[in-house]
Amino acid sequence: MAVVLRNVEKSFGRLRVLNGLELEVGKGEYFVVLGPSGEGKSTSLNIIAGILRPDRGEVYLGGALVDDSGGVYVPPERRNVGYVFQSYALYPHMTAFDNIAFPLKMAKRPREEINRAVLEVAQLLGIREVLNKKPAQLSGGQRQRVAVARALVKRPRVLLMDEPYSNIDPLLRESVRAEIRRIIKDLGIATVMVTHDREEAMALADRLGVLRRGRLLQVGTPQEVLQKPCCPDVAVFMGYNLVPIDGRLLAFRPEDAELGAGDFVGELIDVEFRGRWWAVVARVGGSLVKLYTAEKPSIDGKIRFGVRRLLEYAAE
Ligand SMILES: Nc1ncnc2c1ncn2[C@@H]1O[C@H](COP(=O)(O)OP(=O)(O)OP(=O)(O)O)[C@@H](O)[C@H]1O
Ligand SMILES: [Mg+2]
Image (cartoon, rainbow, N blue to C red; front, side, top):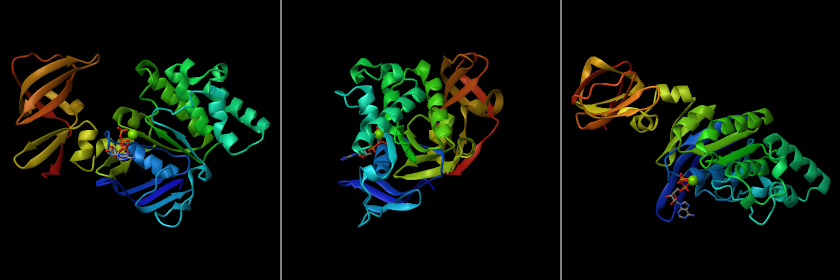
């Protein structure tokens, strides 16, 4: 295993952020932690990097214990971990070259080796032309690539990425993230990326884990988690509608609804055009639900629909 967290707890004052977090990331695996804002995503990465220490639990990297929340603590610079920070955290007074070279300079590597390594990683990421510029002179996308290059220049065994694509122009985001994923996979580096964006997590992850209330509620391939959310919290996060009816908690995806005949009756609230389909918002019982349909529904107040795949959870 490239990264293992065992029963990690972390509080800030009285706020318990991580509460028995378990994580296992395999060699060369691209693992995504998906969770809403403020649930402890950055905190988890900081603990893996060694910037923060857990109150309880253990951290292992490449099979070696690096923090036992007691006497064992390997500092960040000796963990061989690359880190792309949430806002990149480039040094503003340094050129792109010096930013990327920084981890190697800290490690007191010979100048020739540094030059070679920086040029190589810059080539890989397509930023050789901007190496003499400072961060303020770079576009957002170039800054992001410099941050990734700095994280990769030591060829770490683990790469941590904190919301690395959220500042990228939406039009470019899909191709940028696919390209960077390809580079990381080709280098064979295990990655832990965190994001609040479900679609991004699904697109990139070999496996993903859903972080809520300080723990991963479910871990699996994107397909597994999407098809079989373990619990209502994960279902909501995967885009399911939740409808409590007769003491049962029903869940279904917007794309699994079929307007026309069916068991569900609702009041139509609004219809949005989504390019390839219409998104209908309706009130069913006391809940608002979203349905996708190919045809624009006639807006007469009431709608009836069936559901191709219905999940049921024990009501809470
Ligand atoms: N150094 C700190 N001191 C006090 N509270 C902190 C500290 N760092 C984080 N927190 C709190 O811990 C919780 C988790 O923070 P964290 O940054 O890990 O969340 P996150 O999932 O990365 O959120 P986001 O998606 O907004 O980046 C938040 O409530 C935050 O306010
Ligand atoms: Mg964060």
